[in-house]
Structure formats: structure tokens, C-alpha cells
Amino acid sequence: MRSFSPENTSPRDLHAVLLNGVAPRPIALVSSMSADERVNLSPFSFFNAFSSNPPVVVFSPSYRGTDGTAKDSFLNVVETGECTISAVPYRLVEQVSLASAQYAHGVDEFEKAGLTKRPSVEVAPPGVAESPFIMECKLMQHIELAKGAPASGNLMICRVLRIHVAESAFNGDKLDPHRLDLVARMGYSYYCRASGNAVFEAPQPRAIGIGFDALPGYIRTSDLLTGNDLALLAGVPALPERDPAFPAFPDGIQGDSVDIELAAGNPTAALSALMLSASSKAEKNTALFRIAKGFLQQRKVAEAWQTLYMVQ
Ligand SMILES: Cc1cc2nc3c(=O)[nH]c(=O)nc-3n(C[C@H](O)[C@H](O)[C@H](O)COP(=O)(O)O)c2cc1C
Image (cartoon, rainbow, N blue to C red; front, side, top):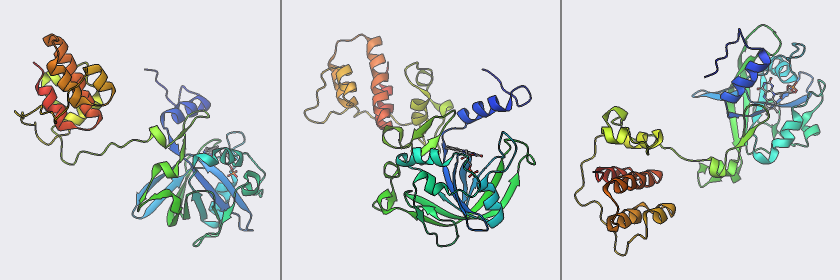
């Protein structure tokens, strides 16, 4: 592996390495106001939520890398102790990028980026009306990480006083990531979009799993199963019993071929095709591992275990 330490890497290179590895990062579109009520809007991807009780989020405006001066968002939030943070959906990404330009102090980036002010309830700075998710925040604490050194960060620890969520972002009473369609910042100028195929579920095991060390050796050392496959198998609370009734095929299931049925996402039919085939023992074992993987892709862990018990 290549190793980087702050001592032997330029700040610019370290910045690039760090931001590629700590990715994707959510983007806070921070609206703030100066004491004389001039509005500012800028994106920050050194940002995350750190507690829900109390609700606390942190973003980090750094001192400018060029001359070490403070950014307008930082000055305003220190001065007034208030901001709003709006989430950034895909449809706003170019406007947000435009708002990140270094406009002079006092210039309203809502106007520059063509965004609409949504009046807040608890704080003076407005939210971004086009965003589906807006937080009204008060500064709790500010931590300066390197006393004004160029490019050094400032942790703005903010308590969330109120959250506004667009009706259109809900599916029933749950927030739907596809409807929110948020973007995140990665390294260089890469972004990613948290919707469509990029979003998937990986529920945590309900019980304490048996763990990799309790998997039978021929399963644990298989070249065909990945770490993800093994983790699903190792997440069961106890080594499953062999089921003498497995495999039982529902009426009418008779697979064409293992390859065709697996490609069609039908591991049960693949198993029925395998049982009728005249393959060798080694070929059958390989096919059983592939069929077990097919079950695991559908999170059918019990069926995967029973399939692996058929390996001879
Ligand atoms: C997506 C995105 C994320 C950014 N994240 C940060 C960040 O976390 N910290 C930072 O200091 N600047 C960040 N920037 C750059 C600031 O937005 C930029 O310096 C801006 O001019 C600051 O505006 P202000 O002086 O009005 O506060 C980011 C820019 C973009 C486009």
C-alpha cells in the first residue's frame, strides 16, 4: 500500500488523498446572516450529524488556503450564532456549485445561484426553498483546529432546533431516499447520487451471529463465496440443522439449466435443473456454491445454508 503522513506529504496532496478516502460526504448548504442582516449561502462537505439526542450537526469552514482569511459563512455564524443547513438534491447540484464561488463579503449567493429564501421559524437565516430537507440551527461551540493556519478547519458544532421536510420526500410515513435524491461529495470534483441502483439495504442481523470462525471450513475457504456472502451465512444465531425435506420444489418448477435460472434470479429452479443434470460431482459442487450465492443475493440465508449442506 502507499503510505501518506502529514510530515512527508504536501497539504494539497494530503487534502486530495483524505477527501477521496473519506467519501462520500453529505453536503451542508449553509445559509447565514451577518449582524447587519446580509445573507450568505455556501456548501460545506466537511459535514455530518453526530447525535440525535440532542440533535447535533457539525460543519467545517476552513480558513482560505490562499491567504488564511476566514470564509463569510464562518464569520456570520460566529457573529450571530445562527444558520440553516439545507440538504442538496441532484437537481440543485450545479446551482450549489455556483454558490460556492468566492463572491465578495455581503453578496447574496441565493441571488447569484437562483435559489429561493424560505423564512425560518427559530432563527433569522432563511432555508433554501428548493431543498427537500432544511435544518434550523444554533451554534453550540466553535473549535478552531489550527489557530488561523491557511486551509485549517473550524468545527462549527450546531444544535438543530427544527427540521422541515418536503411532503414529496415521504413514502407513507417514511422518508424515501429515492425521493430525496441527495448528492454527496467525493474526492477531486466527483459527486455521487444517492438514489436508483446506488441505494441498497443491508439490515443488521437481528441476533448475535455465529461469526466467521464458526463456519465449516469448506464454506469459509470457498473461492466462490465473497466476504459479503460469508457474513450473511455467519449472521445466523446458531449453526442451522440440516433439513431432510430440502430441496422441495413447488409444483411445476423444473429448471432449464443452472446458468439460465441463475441469470433469471431463480436459484430454486437452478437447483431443480442441477438435480436432473448428469454433471460430475465436482461440477455439481461448484454449481451448489453458485446457487447458494443466488439465494444469498436474495437474502434467503436458510436456503443458502441447506444448499451448501448438499456439497459433497
Ligand atoms: C460541494 C462543495 C463542498 C465544499 N465543502 C467545503 C468545506 O467543507 N469546507 C470549506 O471550507 N469549503 C468547502 N467548499 C468551498 C466553499 O463552499 C467555498 O470556499 C465558498 O466560497 C465559501 O463561501 P463563503 O466565504 O461565502 O462562506 C465546498 C465547495 C463545494 C462546491
